[in-house]
Length: 79
Image (cartoon, rainbow, N blue to C red; front, side, top):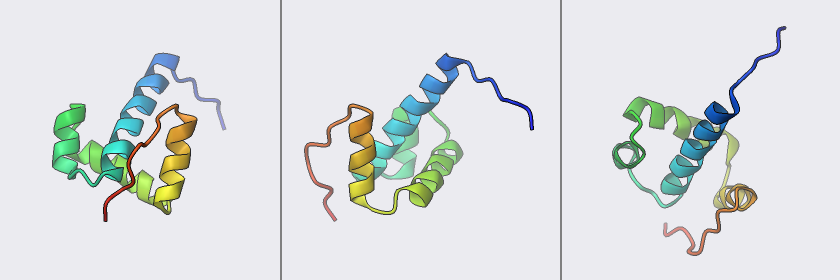
């Protein structure tokens, strides 16, 4: 397999968008509104959400990851 090169700015932009989608999803914002707020298409947002559902099995996993990104969640998710 060949090594992939991704411009650091592209990686930063991807992670920034991912973190935004994750945080909004955590607070149960509908995907249509996430798309509007992030400026990304609904299909793109839904792809991010599928990744989130696959790799973040619970709220604690989301909060733990966000802390690694220097994002403190101050309020618990309301169910």
